Length: 224
Ligand code: ADP
Ligand code: ADP
Image 1 (cartoon, rainbow, N blue to C red):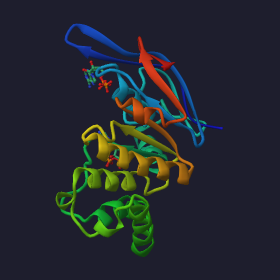
Image 2 (image 1 turned 120 degrees about the horizontal axis):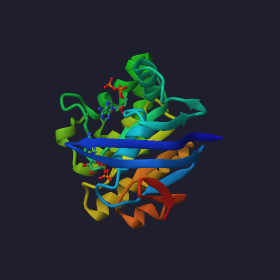
Image 3 (image 1 turned 90 degrees about the vertical axis):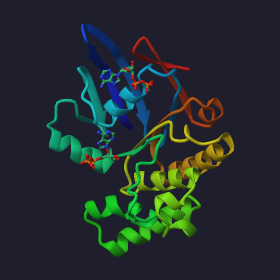
Image 4 (image 1 turned 120 degrees about the vertical axis):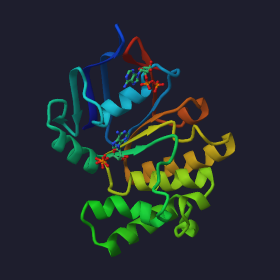
């Protein structure tokens, strides 16, 4: 069954008197456990697509289905609840909370979700171990390297066991060797958890490791 379905999704931005049409009838289906790389030039609409799929932005037309549920016309509270339960985001920059340790950053979404601190800590430690950064659990983000920060951000994104991981250039800020190691860990975690993932990247070597590659052409999603 499909975790994410886009049907006729349109997204436009108004820039002064000009209308930028970013998504123009985008069709897409991501199956459970499937990994897809999104490879397209800057400005093509990758972030717009990920934000629309992850319910951060509303389509102007068309529909976004998450786990079979039509989400485009739901109210903001429902969309936020679904996003918190079902979607994990990773960005090019980690957005970790600077005053908290790696461990606390990964515990946080679980505590918000209502888990007991002991349960949240156990899962956070497992995830940090899985990302091969368990030894750095008690360090703050500023005490970690860029690659380590991204490992923590990835662990945090999957802390609530989402159905769907959306990553926007998750290794775009790292040197190629570090990027490759971080991507290894990301890929292992995704496959181990049976997560579905859509990962925007400029790196063709990393994209080649996904099940499938797509691009954006004239606002539509096309195979690459
Ligand atoms: P990518 O992630 O592929 O670089 P984006 O989705 O960020 O592309 O942006 C696609 C286009 O839409 C760009 O031209 C960008 O300037 C424009 N855009 C993105 N967000 C907004 C916004 N909130 N308002 C106006 N224009 C936007
Ligand atoms: P908030 O913290 O704003 O209430 P949520 O807790 O629902 O939002 O956030 C769910 C996910 O969406 C998190 O991974 C968060 O990083 C991401 N997110 C929330 N708001 C934005 C935004 N405006 N831009 C990008 N990502 C966001």
